[in-house]
Figure 1 (cartoon, rainbow, N blue to C red):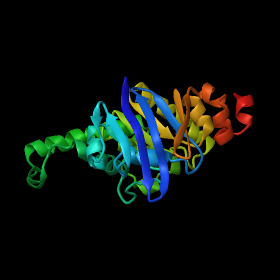
Figure 2: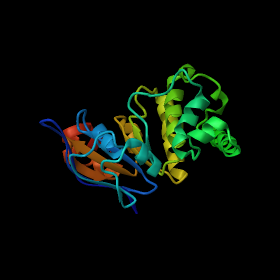
Figure 3: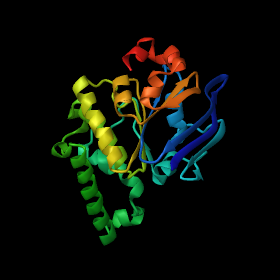
Amino acid sequence: MNQLVLQNVSKKFGGLLAVNQLDLEVPENKILSLIGPNGAGKTTVFNMITGVYPPSNGAITFKGKKLNNLRSSKIVARGIARTFQNIRLFKSMTVLENVLVGMHCRSKSGAIRALLKTPFKVKEERSITKKSLEILDFMGLADFRNDYASNLPYGGQRRLEIARALAAQPQIILLDEPAAGMNPSETADLMDLIIKLRDTGLTVFLVEHDMRLVMGISEIVIVLDYGQKIAQGTPQEIQQNDKVIEAYLGTGAKSAA
């Protein structure tokens, strides 16, 4: 079953056509990677899915309901969360507080309850804190819950950003270059984590340049070039695709496959 569908989606910035008539289907409970050269339109696709930019043309639907022109907060509430190329943590807040912030879209307490500290609000705060600690434990960050986010090592900050996205209780998570800046050991740990996320029932859709990661864990790989989809298939199929080799992977990819 396809959770997320893009039909004939385009995005123009003035005279620049960043994404051109893209058809894309994201099936449930899979690991997908969107790859392509710099400037191919990958992050623009993520930005349209998550409401940062409205598409110029076409339709984006999630579980059969249209996302076009919804605010990002509404899209998160529907079940789509994301991380960013550049880490966007609240670095002067603790690790736990960062995850608590991610829970806000699931809070049912209004402003009056929050001000008055009603029994409902107190009970909900305890539940949210408990769930946040469970997420930190799952992500291997429970021991750092009271540390400032800025004090985490780089790989830990990447994990915390994913933890904060998980706090929104998504059904699909979009990871924008999650391995950027990581050393080989951190990347290997990230690969294990992404598989672990998929095994919980989550759909993982990532943009990534690290081909070892992409080819090592992806079930479906989609390739963009100049805003157009030029290929889709398994990692093995993509490594053997002449168009992809010419546009992105290089001549050594086929012999290495």
